Image 1: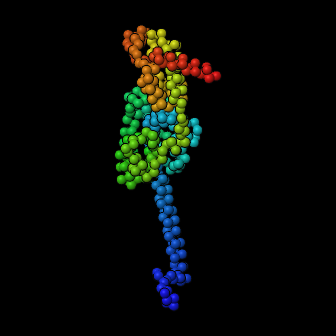
Image 2: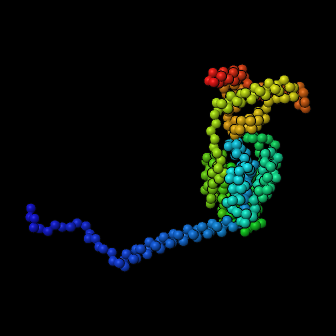
Length: 322
């Protein structure tokens, strides 16, 4: 090989940028940062302007029962940090809120109207069908939607509509308000929201009520709770079983257990169903011989023989473990 031949260099020769080019690159970078910062500032100012006139609509019937049944959390909580109304006032400010309406059948909800009124909210009482729990129906969501749409004509200055709900009934009205150029914000409960609907796509801002209110998702000892339920049923029949005007109905029993065991209604309902499937409790008919329902038959819950044996078995195990 001839070592005297010069070697070829591959590639394109690198050129050193001139001072002018360096300066231009730095200026472009600075302008890019300033431009992005300016855009963010403008966006923030636009959102702030949109929050200058706010109307809040709370489907309280829906929110109250959903939070109580799933988490045993009262939205009108004694702690300000966990109180729905305090948290909403904190976010939007009393100088910006033009309407704050709360819809529910307040004869059924275990909330103090005086306490609610002290939160400076407008009460909208809507009658329900008079039933409890899963069988309860009312038209609070319909009233709320009608009022929200009417409000766009009565007070066009409202720039932001806030909805607090635990289901997807508000989607049509939220979508309509977005088309009208209004800012729409939503506080919802993801645990009860339909899995097939992405509610957040119909609003500008959304937050889970669990996060907003700092709701504690507790874990429950289902085995221990099942024994306690059996014991409560047994105690009731020992005290009232012979009375001709008393019967242990499933509705009263659920309400009693929720309060007595400090456990969400949804878990109590699941445990009662499990106890039925295991044959530890049964539903029987009782003929009433006294009172205003004399001569009628009512369904009631009792412990089966297996259920009573389960109570004894558990008591013996606890005695041994001492």
